[in-house]
Amino acid sequence: MMKRLLFTIAILLVSFTAILADEVSFVASAPKAVVVGQQFRLSYEINRGKVKEPHIPAIEGFTILMGPTRSISSGYHNNNGQVTMTSSTTYTYILRSDKEGEFTLPAVTVDVDGEQISSNSVKIKVLPQDKQPSAAQQSGTSATEIDNSELFMTATLNKTDVFEQQAVLLTYKVYSTVNLTSLNGKMPDLKGFHIQEIELPQQKEWQLEHYNGRNYRALTWSQYLLFPQQTGEIEIPSVSFEGIVQQRVRSASMDPFENFFNGGTQFVEVKKMLRTPKLKLNVKNLPAGKPADFSGGVGEFSLKSSISTSELKANEAVTLRLVVSGVGNMKLIKTPEVEFPADFEVYDPKVDNNFSVKVNGLSGNKIIEYLVIPRHGGVYTIPSAKFSYFDVKSGEYKTLESESYTLNVAKGNAKDNETVASYVSKEELKLLGQDVRFIKGGETTISKRGDYFFASNIYWLCYLIPLLLFIAYIVAYRKKMAENANIAKMRTKSANKVAVKRMKVAKRLLSENKSNEFYDEILKTLWGYVSDKLSIPVSRLSKENIATCLAGKGVDEALVKEFEMLLNESEFARYAPGNPSETMDKLYSLAIEVISKLENAIKK
Image 1 (cartoon, rainbow, N blue to C red):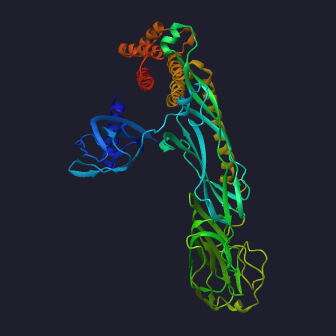
Image 2: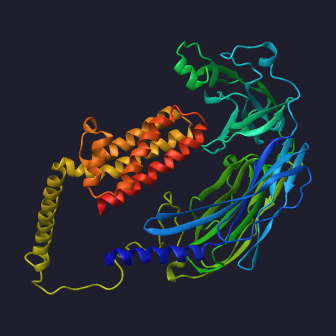
Image 3: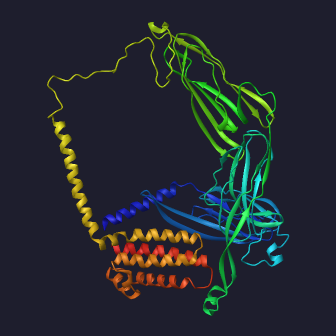
């Protein structure tokens, strides 16, 4: 009991320290886009409990309808054994957008322990209302058919007239006013381009957008960076996608009980083929006057250089480093060449590409490192390296030059003046003028005569230690096998782990708003947990014997009733009217709480 008390105190101290160590954050959040006349929430969240509520001033273009309302949340988190406690307060306002345009809600300042903390500002785009009804509403299209104005895809290029090798952004976007649940399609086979896909978030987010007089939910499906490798007019073919839409239709069922609970409607899945338009791109030749040392670079670049040392001895290595930075076709440019003195041993350059895919090209740098070895003493000059490229902004060729460097090379030894050999292999450094090289340098340890490893103490330990480890492994293995043989004990131990896995599945179903599957998974979790924990088959379980068995395990009567109530609510919630999302959230939280309480109660 004392150990548990000390452990609890330690956790509280660690949590309190973590709270004090956290920086105060004050974050404002609101939708990125709303429609004129629409009501929306503006929230301010601060990770401190006792603060003065924020007061926002009158904002042009918006009417404050209500607020602020306050809500407080807290919890414990275990991250790799480090327990932290989080607590935050959220203040929420209800606003109404009054006119079209782009607005910035200014930052708000609050007093926290005598310190003034400011939130971030929030940008909101207010869209106009729909100017025309949908084509489906005008023509009376069937609910099992999706009109092209309700769901479609666009393909756009950020440029239609470019030079060869100039980056072009291709974007595929989805516009929808219906419940689109899935979309499948492939990238077209594009010939004459070098292609780089832009990584987009796996969890795509719909945004409100005004398009052709209507407001749609829109999302960017995919983006590609294209570098044309040929000139002339290039056609980007259309792409076909198959979408699955969930539509609500009138129920044909004659069962009054079913019609009562589903409102006389049911959901059906409707397939919709989407096809993007064809696009044309005009690719021009690069202008005349291309430099002789043209790198093939098209974009905006810079060149820097550095050298590891300018004072060294013959046969010592020196590294020349060139860095080409910028935005453009970084992956396709040639490596700048350097003309080193004739008696320098030059190794193949090491090239590191450090760039990322951006909407305007490949952005980053290319690092080139030359390793060279001067074989004779003297003063040498490493000339500047040249890098020529086509600048898309000015429409001209530009040539960049690095610095030139002077090396003072001292004589290494008497053999420094010998003839320099030419080596085909550059994999290892060679010292010239030495026919025989030593095998090992440093101090040498000499052993006494008759001092052998065989039959020594270390020799026998090499046999004994593996034998002892093998015996220990056999003992541990037999103990583990004996525990695994006790199926009831193993089920009891793993009950909580199995329940946690099932609750993760329920969480996924909750986020996907699959209510029927969610309730089934919650019930399976609850019945499965008590079945494993009490070592009773599910077929023999009932609410009555669950109560008896839990009481036998020393579980408090109030907790047993709470578990029974959770079972009843889970069975009833599927058919209960009201807000399904709110009910599912409540059941999910309650299930986690009750299972956690049972786990702690049964362990005592």
